[in-house]
Image 1 (cartoon, one colour):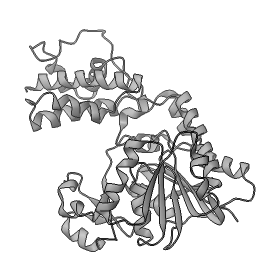
Image 2 (tube, rainbow, N blue to C red):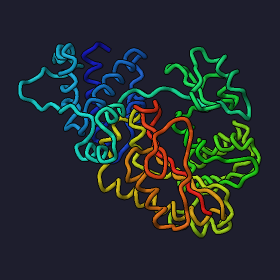
Image 3 (cartoon, rainbow, N blue to C red):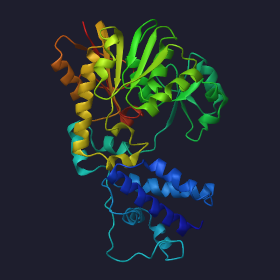
Image 4 (cartoon, one colour):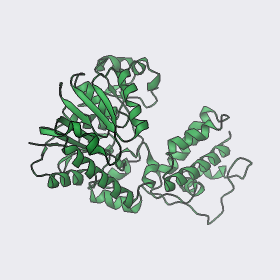
Length: 394
């Protein structure tokens, strides 16, 4: 493909991505992968160039653009050399017409910028959400020593305060490594590793991972427990929870079991576990604002109404989880969000609703105190954005 054809391909993809963001369709990565699968003629250099154009445009636009062309014209303002590729060639974009719509550069939609500011996140913190994320792994200590894995991966460095964490070069083909195939490591952001540590699980405990999803934190908890005790991993999403046990088998985890829950029937379906758990982890569905370095178009999907639904769901899940904790046990609230409505505010609201529960101070070597817990940010901690609070029932 010539440069003009690559630019037009990026415009076409941006049209699809913006439409999907408007209609709650597939993610940008999924749309791009499907587009390339249908166009085998696009070589590796073509794919790389097109992907970079698409994501450069997405990252520089706070508001969802009217069209892919308007988005690309905004990028032209920063990269004037792209203008000559609007040449009207058979596979290239039509020439630029004076006065045609150009998307406005920005970091966040206006309403979200206000919400972030209200949550104590300044412009630098907001801008850091759109930087490229690093590649972190967690060494599975059930199968390998972190020093051994570090020696096997050129350029890898230990993650401070994370005994099993490594940061590896961004182009490392993780899934092709023998250690990955053997279950000796998992891709897991440093922030996710920190909040897993916040659970403070110990050998022999009974643990419930209430919103386990694909099981990343379940596997981390099992390793921290040295495969002694039990972990019940639950979710309402059948496809996601079905992936957990194959991952557990590969990782050598033997203490986990899964339970598919029906929406709005969680209490009855977990009645046999009421008041028995030493630790309940609630990694609740959330806005995902802390993961926008990886999914920058996601900020075009979030609306005030959708955020309100997440906040309501989180509150319900925390109330369900509270009834599962034994006297003296712990409830851990985790969200990959930077907004107080989902993090510090949500944890404080739980404490207000449940007299007797107390927030325990957390000292993990990273994160900043925020309300009853800690907040991790891309700017401050070089992690995805997270909030975690550890609350105990006396």
